[in-house]
Image (tube, rainbow, N blue to C red; front, side, top):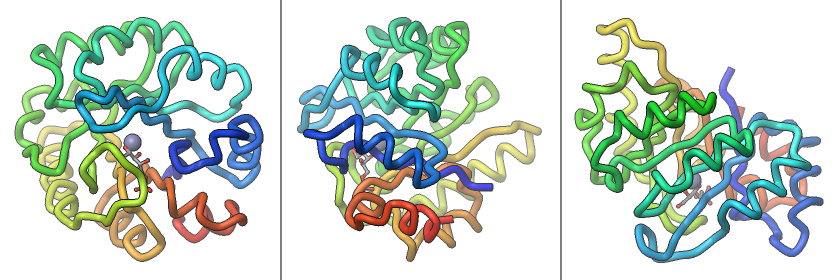
Length: 213
Ligand code: DX5
Ligand code: ZN
């Protein structure tokens, strides 16, 4: 069954603890945390001190999406905090396989995120070392943007390559996910759906999450 990962970015930051409790109760599988540095993306969010506090109060797995130019500086600390999923952007790292190894030796699940303009073929040589791929269906940096259907072709390319090479991998879609595109995404092979504004825009988070499934 598909895993739903609400993005904290769309929550009320003046009540983070309350929002996390509500989202857990509403049946979220994973909590998606968007780390932005104001360099790789034109926006700033939060970093390690806040993530380690969140880890103490959150009972569902954390999924940290690193939208930063220097993800390698965060990996050991994130693993030390016990973050379950960590993704780094293909566009930010020279030695992807090395950083994936760092994440996995820290006992977290390792993923590579791809911007809309980045070809999936760029990660095929190391696909077998990954636990998941995060396909951006908007340009990273902000919540509430319009979904880009170009991810469908990427999902099928990954599925085809993975099948041919006997690779088991999760496919996470991030950006503009809603109840209109979720059924097609799941059908195409997405196994994790990130949703920020769609989940948080309605006070009934449970209903929103259920409608995505
Ligand atoms: C965008 C972030 C997303 C964002 C999704 O840079 O990576 O995780 O929070 O928000 P929505 O679902 O509103 O597009
Ligand atoms: Zn994200």
